[in-house]
Length: 122
Image (cartoon, rainbow, N blue to C red; front, side):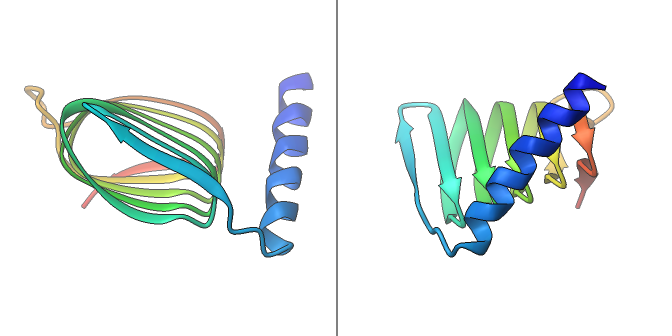
């Protein structure tokens, strides 16, 4: 129950930032690592097997190429990627869309914590 209260408090905070019109954050790509933090970012990156971390609210991120591990946290983020091995989602209403995974099943390993999060093959 305590975890749910914390998740709700964080979500309310981030949603408040969004409603206040905050379009802030940082994003970077160093070598194989992609990192996006903030609110309302719309970005496209290329990856060749590195890791990606997306955190914040209402970000729309496209990653062309292969991602080894994709971590998404916050609320209302949407991430589109071609190929991903592992997906970790925390928070509320985050969505990840992928084309394939480099596994026998063609599906990535998925870990989801929170409410309304989802992973979908496109």
